[in-house]
Image (cartoon, rainbow, N blue to C red; front, side, top):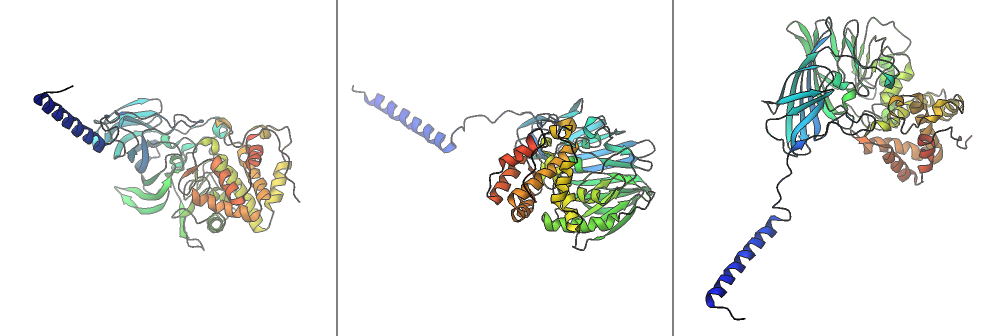
Length: 477
């Protein structure tokens, strides 16, 4: 077919235009013409199997700046929380966890934002969408009388924000951080903290990390604490009361701060001395101490039938014995520095801390972990409900049952007897190093144990953690 000159010229121009367009498309890359994803609300929870609505989707918490002013006479708390976070999607709205307290205002990046409440969810709608990957701040001003939680999880014990005769005892595992500050209240969303406590003159506010500043302002006591290492929300505290404070350093050089309620009777346990000794010993066994300060908060809180591994300073509802101290300090590695990805992995916290009690007795020469294992095993009859709970997935309402603690510890001793001391005591610090300041789950621990030992260990963990019934004791002396 023959074309006229004008037709040929038109064809050449069309071809040139097509080539230019194609080159531009190639330069821009695949998908360049696609519009960026539209902004959408973040999920109201992280989907934890035990607490599906705890935590929040759409952002990663980076830092909390908490200001709390407490009035013991009325129980009123006035709070101002500024959260710095990074958006993980284009956000049109996002949630924070906050239980019952009244919200006066919310601002995003310094600009007033709309908000609404539904149950324990505070939904924030910024004036304009937040772009994925960008940092932003949200400031919430709130007030009210925080209420402790209770129920089957801690077998009827109150927990969270608990009023004392002279102040408040704050111990929030697993889901009570949001009773006193708006947060992404799940251990999978760790952040650093500045915590500023305002209280009546004569009281001391004690929190996590190191004391930055303290004194009196406007006739009231003031304390500013800074936790510069990532922390799960439930490990934050703002315990207030009359305390005798002792500070110093452990023999190994770690700063130590111990606050004790002076009304408590002097017991046989030296809280300061045991805290110092255990911090240094665990640093040898588990790896370097992960925080800037160690210590203790010892308060008179009869309603709290537990103590808690608050990061850097465990809180004790009156210290019961040395065993309690070494248990809570072991948690600084297992639970605080290395936190669970999901609450079903709670044995990684409690099983390890219970096993640490056996290691402490072994260290002191009073009983071997081997003997402690067999005594614990023999003390529970084969038909007991203890053996029916899966330590590796105990379910929410029994997540703090004896099974999680004791059978979790038994699992570790069974592992030690399978792989030998050399591999086992390489495994512990390797685990805390691999996941330092992060989150982990059981499958990762099994994989690391297999790598270090060179053995397949799935059968051992399945038997001791996941199979109901009383396992056979491993062969041993």
